Amino acid sequence: MRASGILLLAVVVAGEAWAEGCVIHSHDERIEVKLCQQNRTIPAELFRSGFCQPELPGQEVEVTFVDQCPTGAFGVCRNAQVSNMPYRQDIHYYGIASDARFLQPACEQTNKGEWAVE
Image (cartoon, helix red, strand yellow):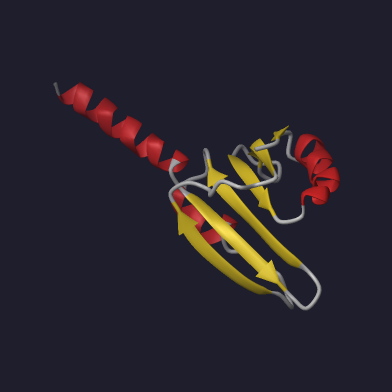
């Protein structure tokens, strides 16, 4: 009975990584960017304190934590690898759909992810 309780707790804790995302909205006078990072395997504290806190000099940045990334993205980089680290996330892109011509190759080549259209 005790082992099954531990297993259930492990499943719940592992499930929490899937149920956390952050919407990042940044802009300056010329450029506006909105994306959402959906955590897959990044430790929760590292995800919140590092991955969801971009440093973009000269830009106003708003970060909102969500359970799941909102619908309406023009593309998603699924299972994206994070900067040569063992961590994975899904990156949802919102805004100008023609940006996919730059984002898709970066997703597939740099992040070793899979590009999907929502």
